[in-house]
Image (tube, rainbow, N blue to C red; front, top):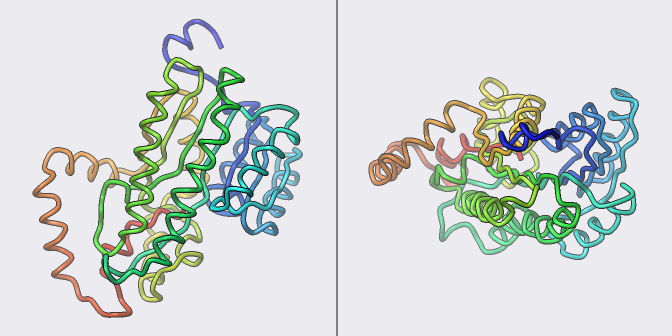
Length: 297
């Protein structure tokens, strides 16, 4: 990387990277892994479903003629993540230069007070603690290398705060805040932090999450017709990390909501609540708002 690139915040850290991707067995995680392989990188594909991770590795070999590695990992489990950090360094022949904390689950359909603590713990364990584990364990390795990147996959739900999505909103808002904190802490270190906050992405999050049946059907329909492809989102996010950008809001609706809430926070919250009250509710069918903020991560 030349002097001009340093001054402009440009890098090619996603090219030829030694990378680890959680949730690499499907969706955005698989797209990240394939794109990194296309850019000449070595990739460790971690997933709680080892068969899906193996399939990603086979796709990388078939499409790009490259070698990748599949590992089982439950990101909510501290021991699994500690093992992932150790084995990643061994498999890549050194510390990773790019860490993508992507693993996540969808949850929605009940207001706070009717969610249940088990669902709170499940969602926060994966969506929040999975990212905390990844950042806490891999950041020292990246600091030691003195260059690289961290990409945390959040969601537009981090700032939309839609009703009946409490655990999901909270987990993604925390990931956004963590990423902002780390961007400040790692400024000048050669390690760039990027947080991805999409609305719809065409993935299997609705099927794999804890979402009411009617909501799942609607979410999958909206993903199909309005969602970005995971491949497009992965390319955009890797390019953004190369440029040292903190925020990635791929879709126009996410950017509009981001601006609206910051310019008119009270009006935004009141309007959201009024809209939610106008929509039909039932025990089995959460509000429309609760189903349209799924990111597919």
